[in-house]
Length: 122
Image (cartoon, rainbow, N blue to C red):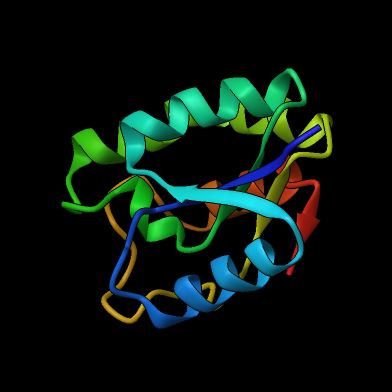
């Protein structure tokens, strides 16, 4: 069985994600990076056990820092929770307070829900 991990968000220029992807590849994993639309597909695959999802920056849920993005972030939580219950959701926590402040509707409550949904927190 192929082991696969999807990184979210797809910030391709980030050297940490490239290094993490290379280390996973060296260990026999395949990987990709996705934006919000690809995250839906990745979470569905994680729920049925075919993929692991790695959330790297929660800021990816509200990239334009708009209220609409904030509502969209909350709509992801049921899928995140289901993937976490299957042991397939990993969140790397860099900081709990973003450098530029929280986006509308994506604040401490959202982070608590994301933490509870995650099967592993790094």
